[in-house]
Amino acid sequence: MKAGKHSAGWLVAALIAGAGIALSAGESRAQFSPGSNWAAYILPDKAPAPKNNPTTPAKVELGKQLYFDTRLSSTGTVSCNSCHNVMKGGDDNRATSLGVHGKTGGRSAPTVWNSGFLSAQFWDGRAKNLEEQAKGPMVNPVEMGNPNHDVVVKRLQQVPGYVSQFKTVFGGADSLTIDNVAKAIAAYERTLVTTNSPFDRYVKGDQKALTPAALRGMDLVQKSGCTSCHTGPNFAGPPMSEGKGFFMPFPRFESAYTAKYDLKADTGRYSVTKSEPDRHMWRVPTWRNVALTAPYFHNGKVKTLEEAVRVMGKAQLNRDFKDNEVKDIVAFLSSLTGTFPKQTAPKLP
Image (tube, rainbow, N blue to C red):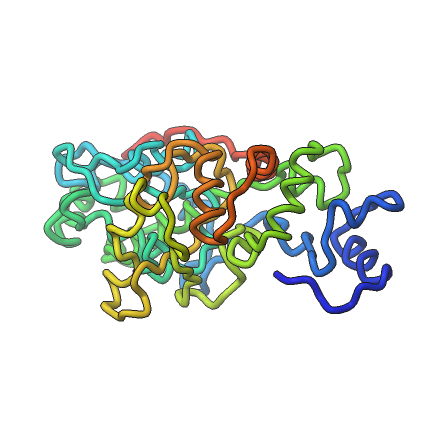
């Protein structure tokens, strides 16, 4: 987001009013830049569901059971929750996750919280939606290790409780299909929304929700250009049609961090499309709950949020953030930790 050409006081006041914020005279320019409309960043209470997979309580409950069920893996040891732990920040806080037989991949597991707001799924955007994403790990040799989806379906068909639930939720004698398995998991994942963060409360009018450091960081990320990529309610890109994805190059600038953290070993979206313009292009990750999801970046090689801010400043903006600026940005990013809906492990059939 860039500042508009107009500088009249009414514009700043209008933008602030549009965000539902009341500030004292002389305070607005210190906290908000012309052109900022933070109201557009408030996280909705619900993630949008596609027309072919409406959300229902029964479907969500079924999806939750499947999400926690290690029987989706070839060894019976790995569930969706193993790598995307909803009892924590939605990931596993590992550089790379452990799959079947202790295998590890090359990328860090992204958080599942608020994933229903993403423009595409996986770091490289190879899945257009949560339904498509849910199918991938089951047949990945490093993750769940099944040779094909038919094996997964046949295994679930041996569980009477699942057979009856699929009939109830989806209807028909042949309702236990891989497509419906994915639909149920996706329906559950769309309920994983963390609203009511200090940032959201502040933008809605609670002037005490953010600390002075967080307010300075809020202004700094906008003025520095960070919100050109980390925009929208999920701070992961603008609202887009499902599946198109919002991608940015990383790293944009060469620096000592490139070699230190091996940032270019993985080609990103190029590994999917084989199109040269997609080399080192990545789906923009969310800032929501980012204080809980260390380590950072696609390879999980940066251990702290403070260091991640320094890396992003240099790699994307060619800017060396000062120590006090790093602290303020981290304070703002920490204000994006929302309220997590209580999760309890389901009783499996």
